[in-house]
Length: 115
Length: 115
Image 1 (spheres, rainbow over the protein chains, first blue to last red):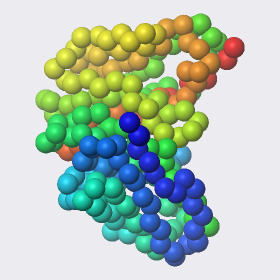
Image 2 (tube, each protein chain N blue to C red):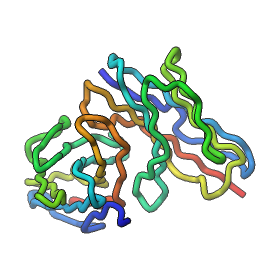
Image 3 (tube, rainbow over the protein chains, first blue to last red):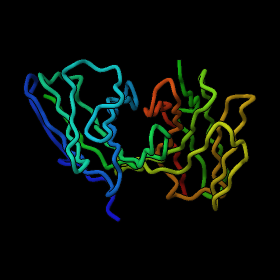
């Protein structure tokens, strides 16, 4: 069974640009969550999508957005990039029956560097 | 508010030593879930265990064991006879009704096992 796949693995962008990251969850998983990992703030929850609907959202500015497609694949977008957006972005998929917190399986992440 | 504290930032041990990683959590939820993840240098978070708040039984899986004590709000993780391959960053995480399906992570403990 294939794991969670995130593309691209590495990305370098310039301040002010926008970026789109992609995540393909484990087959059969309908919940996809996104996390930002930085040395200073650690792992922080961005948002979660379930059946194409945003079900939960963390405390991030509106420049961070996402969506989920009918095949459960998800994308997250960051507009008007800032230096502080440099981070490892991790995607997690889970079965998530109803709102039960089943275990989340993570991808290898996308390392975004903003210069 | 929900919070996870991993007071140990870094631990260094020699192979075959036992090591315990501490995790203390705060939540007002009566139903919640606790997790441990391992993050090797490759970046992905590897799921190790999930425990719900009603199950205080300790668990052992090979060289790994977990001690959950609601009275002290702790969920500690012990590696017996550590090996070099155990070197990684270990994260404790919490989820509950307050944060929906979001995982609240501790800052992580970096474990270095030398031969």
